[in-house]
Length: 348
Image (spheres, rainbow, N blue to C red):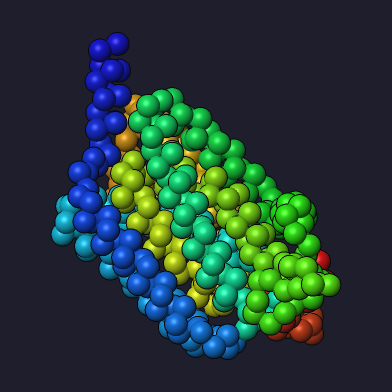
């Protein structure tokens, strides 16, 4: 009994516990605001982003996210930087799902490509606020009720298994509910009014499809946060590290969307990889009160699962292309992509 209690205490102590000064929080928030401001300024003209620009911006955001590892290492040490990196990789991996769901949402509401960045900017701003609330609430609950680790862990395993079994319409069921919720507060126009979120119908203030789309984006982020925040809490219990990893992973999603939105069919096994990651972190979280997986092991498993899913997807794509060529079919269609602006869809 004594040995079990000692193991529990050791597992709890294995996570880094930081005394983060107020100026560090202020500096992190100032950096996030500055990055958002620069991004908003660069996209002020509502022009359609090119694939080249999306690639450059994606690389810049990833560089910021990975570069922050060295900031954490210099300020708090190697263990803290390892937990931040693990959290960043978990959140970045799981956030890929957001990209594909956004493509479906914009297609459903027929939002032109040149206005999509505006929706995503404010959607990600709201996501940062929501994630901060989820993170601080989750850490406070876990610190007070350790058994919630098991509850969250089992939930993540269940979610991971569900993702493995079915992926096609995950996270896309909330459209009607979100729009109906908005209609309780104001009329919703069926036509766009430029880049504006509001318009007037018969002299009355009304929401445009752009605002309806933003509401759906925020609604789906809440759904995804229920999975991703507990997953990151499985690799770190320090609010500063968890929030920073979430923030830097989320900030790069706009550029990733314009780069990857048409790749859903090409990354066939990515969903399987994300499901396995959820199962792994769920098991890790469930037993973390008694046994702590080394951070290096967690990083290795996440990287291997994600890389394996991408490689397997590429192998499958090439086999389909060769098979299509053998039977004289259009191989390009089997391995092709659909740009976000080309995906057809009815107006709500």
